[in-house]
Length: 299
Image (cartoon, rainbow, N blue to C red; front, side, top):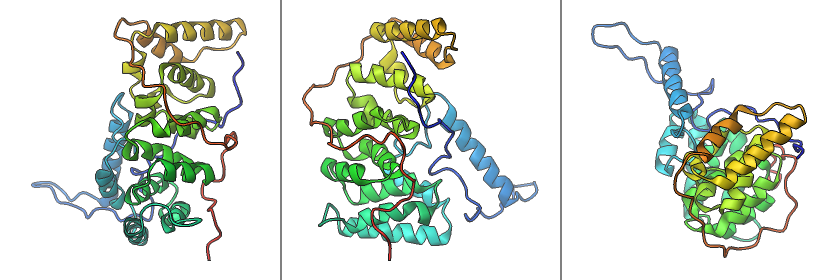
C-alpha cells in the first residue's frame, strides 16, 4: 500500500480565533487592587485560552463547523477590523434578503469569492460559513458552490454542511473531498457532518487517508465514538502498520492511538441508510485551487 502524494498538513489558524494585526483589541481593563492590563497582553491571554480549548481532545470550540452560526458571528466580529466587520454585515444582509440561487450566480456567491480578501485568510472560512447560513443554502446550492468553487470555498461548504443539511443529501460532497489529496479538504470532510453520515466502510477508509496524508486524527470529529470496538478498523490499521514496517517506513503515532480505540470493546457504530444521491460529476481537486480565486472577475 503506497502513500499518495498529498498537500502537506500544515497547521492552520483558527478561522475565527486568530487576531490579525489590524483587529481592534479590547480596551485595557484595571483589575481591582491591581495594575491595568495592556491590550496586547489581554489579547495574548485570550488567544492562549482559545488555543488550549481548541486543542483539548473532543473540545474543538474554535472549529467553525462546531460553533453555532450566532456564536461564530460574535466570535468573528470581535476579531475583524472595522472595515472587514462592515463588509461582513453588508454581505450577510444581502444574503438574507436574496437567499437561494438566482440565475448564473447569486450575489451571495460573489461575496464568498471576496471573503478571503475582505476578511483575511485567517477568518475567511468563518465568513463564508456565515454567508452560506444567511443565504439558507440547501444541498443543491451547496453542491453548486462546491463544484464551481476554489479549494477555500469548497472547504467552507464542507464546514457549513453540519449547519445547513440535516440529512445525508450532501454525503457525495464529503466523499468527493476524501478522494482528493488536499489535506485541508480531507480534514474538513471529517467534521461533524461526515461523522454523522459517512457509512462505516467509507469512514474507515477516511481514517486511513488521514494516516496516509498526515492529517492529525484529532481533526476527526467523534473519532473515539466511531472507532471504539471497530474490529474491522483494527484489522485495517494492523495491516497498514505491517506494510509500513516491512517497507522500512515509520508507523505514525496516530495509528497506535486509533488502534487502541478500535481494540477497545464497545458498541459498533451505527450504519446510516444506504440510499443517497450520486456524487457530483466533476474532477476531484487533487491539487488545491488558489484560496481566493473568485468565480468572476470583480469590477
